[in-house]
Image (cartoon, rainbow, N blue to C red):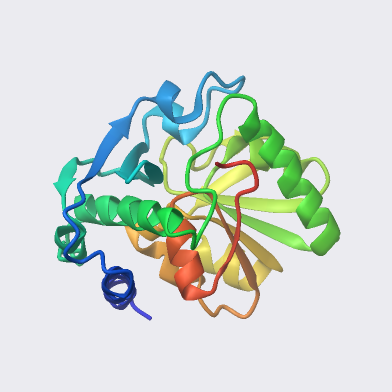
Length: 247
C-alpha cells in the first residue's frame, strides 16, 4: 500500500463513518489548535521529548466535547464541518493531514470506537515507559527491538534490559548517543535495522502524518505502534497499538 492509497482508504472509512452515524449533515464545528508544550504534556522531569525540543507540534481537535490529538511538524488551524474535513486534500498537503488525523481521533473517540486519544502528562510519560518495558518483557523477552522514533523515556527503560536500536529523522538526534544507544537514521538505516536486524518493531504513530507508516505494514514481524496520533488509524486498519496512560 502506498502512502496516497493509505490516506484515501482512511478518508473513505471516515466518510462511511459519518454517514453511518448521520453526521454528514450535522453542523458540528471541529477546531484544531497547536498546543504549547506545557498544555500538551505538562511539566515533565525529562526535557528532551520531541514536543519540548520544538521538532513536533501537537494539534488538538474537539468534537462535541471530546478531544483527539496528533503530532505533526506542519501545524495548522481549522474550524468547519465533518464533511469539510472529509474533503481535505491529504495527498500533498501535510497541514491537512494533521487536521484530518486529529479530527478522526476525536470523532472515533466520541463514538466510543477508540480510547486513549489525549497525550499523557507530567509524570505519566515516564510511567508509560515502564509499562512498555513490562509489555516487552512479557511478550518479547530476548527479542531484538527496533524503536522507530526517538522517545527518550521509552528508550531509557528498554535499553536497561533489552537489545534495542533506535531510528529517528531529527538531525539533532541522528548520530548521537542517547541512553547508551546510537540514534540511527530513519530512512538510511531503515532496511538494516527494521527489516534485517529486528525481531519486533515499536513504531511511533507520528509516522502516520509523514506517510512513512506504510513502511511498517506487512514486513513479516510484529509491529506495535505507540502514541496518540495513530489511535483511529490503527483501529481502522487492524494494527496493534500500545498507549497505556493516555486519556
